[in-house]
Image 1 (tube, rainbow, N blue to C red):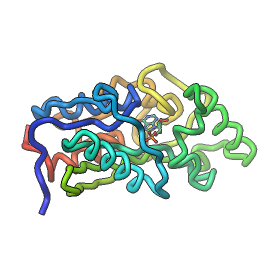
Image 2: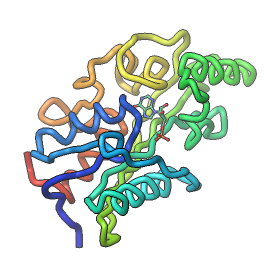
Image 3: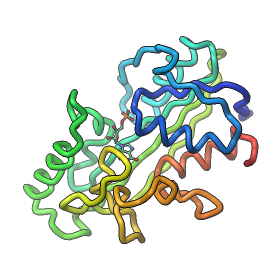
Length: 211
Ligand code: IMP
């Protein structure tokens, strides 16, 4: 049986870009969101082998520490020509200073080393795994992806992370050139464009009251 989210929800992220997007996604559903940072919760080590298990590790740790339902996302970019790298290590490729200009340059250098010059050799997708954990160990989990190609040089200053390099399929502008509303592409404008918005639509179906 799926369980609905009611009342207060901890957002188990310390990433300001993701926190802002999650608050935007939750706001229309009347959920009172409080971040793990605001509650002074620590960050667990992400020891899982895939996005789904890392999202669960973060949500369970926050739910246990706060004794409240907690919501976590684990996400990243999967580059086909790099055998799926950086994948679950997408945040780590930016290093301790979170330098995504350097992380994007690293991807580009590796693509060039492999001779990946044409769009068909530069395909990639973002993945978002979402997990809601309750203090009694109940879990709800969903996952979605957004497909596209990688452009160089990066374009746009909106968004965060690898957004300026990612051109979603069927669009002429990168995520870095879109407003967050366009990037989410949520109803009534669309059915979800970004990986996080698509996963969120799935989660809303099972866990949230209709908007
Ligand atoms: P984690 O989920 O905290 O392990 O971090 C995932 C990393 O993937 C982020 O730090 C970003 O670098 C990247 N990422 C995830 N979602 C997005 C997105 O929507 N745009 C750009 N980069 C993203």
